[in-house]
Structure formats: C-alpha cells, structure tokens
Picture 1 (cartoon, helix red, strand yellow):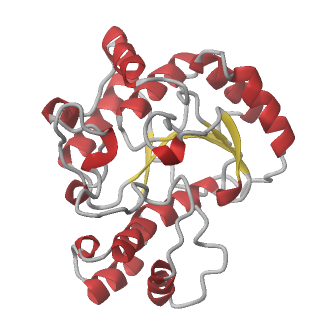
Picture 2 (picture 1 turned 135 degrees about the vertical axis):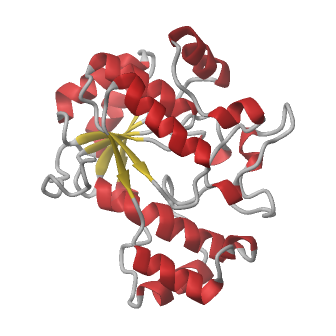
Picture 3 (picture 1 turned 45 degrees about the horizontal axis):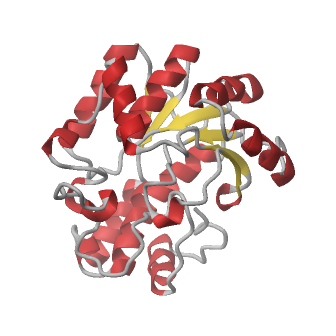
Length: 274
C-alpha cells in the first residue's frame, strides 16, 4: 500500500477554467479511453489517481485505465463502515489486475470524538449528524489524498442524480483546491456501464446482484425495488436531504459546520470545501 503523501503537495497551476472548458468540449464526443490516455500523458502516473468507491462505474474505469497503463494509481477511502463485500472486491481487483490499491482511512482520534459525542449510529438521528459522519469518514481522508494530486478521475455520471446533471468531462475542482477533475463516463447510461462490465469480464460488487443500485457504507445503503431511483437506497430515512456525502460537492447547513468544528476543536476555515 502506497500511503497518501508520498509526493509533495500539488502545484495546482496545471490548468485554468478556460483551458478546462476547451478540453471538456474536445472530449465531449470522445470515448472515455481517449480522455484517460490524454490524462496519463498530461499529468503522469503519480499526480493522477483514480479515486474509487468500487461501485460499477469505478470498476469500468479501473479496467479501462489498467489497459492503457498498468501502473494506474487506484485510491479508495475505507470509512470503517463498509460492507464486507467491498473489502472482498478490493482483493479481487488486486488479484485480477495485479495492481496496488491504496487504502486511506479516517483519523481514529476524530472518529473517537464523534462516537463519544454522538454515538456509533449517529447518522440515523439527524441530517447534520449524517453529514458530520460523512465528512470525517470520507471527505477529510479524501482531501488528504487530493492535496498531493494534480488531477483525479471519478465515476460520476450525469444520469445518477440531479446534482450531477451538469458535470463536464474535464473540470477544475475548486472545492478541492483547484485540481483537475476528470469524469470520463459523464455521458454514459446505466446500460453502457453494465454492457462494458459484461463484455470485458470486469470484477464488480456482489451487492449489485442483491438489488443494490448505489453502494456506500453498510448502515447507509440498502437494496431498492426494480425501477426505483438508483440513489434512493442511500440514506433512505432522510426526507428532502441531499443524496450526497460532500465528496463531490460542498454541503453547508449551519448545524453541520458547528458539529464539525466541535469535533475538530477549532474553526474550520477552508476545510468544509468538498
């Protein structure tokens, strides 16, 4: 496992919004592999990483990227509450492709403070507490990785949720300090994803065969009925709340910020971005 922080912090001067917009237009009608090949050439192997939660889209991207460059960096955040099937898939991916999967984890001290203050399953009590849990278990560990990159690859698709409808294939991620964010599958449908997985024998998450359509932490994910919104199995007990954890868009509620500050023990400053 290559720990986060083995390269110096990113320069973050690799691209501006104008250039990103030009590349987004250029790659809009291109295949995902075209964008990935360009990304390896533009950013190199160490400054570019595929951030994976091991959902179906990430499985596709790992396979594509590995075929282009077997030394692709694959990074995942282990929140400490993942389903056993996710850990099994990580090992299957390692064996199948012969790659290292870099696993980063949340700060145990912060998690301990949160649990002592609000309990193990705090996320069921209040949206602000759910966002607090996501922030400490997902967003902060991810930020520690992104601080050392110039570009990251995600499996975001426009069809996944309303907050993702306008994503471009090449963006400047101002929520994470201005690095480049690449979404090669932005224009893909569910059928596109699963056709690729089946045609190429790609290892995928076992929970998809049990009715899951979006997979996160075990306590916060459940299967859905056929035809239901794919994200409806995430945080299903919440009403009119964002189906996001904060990794891909900033979420600010007031109460959420107060709780994070209480756990961290100081003013957040810019830490809530992301």
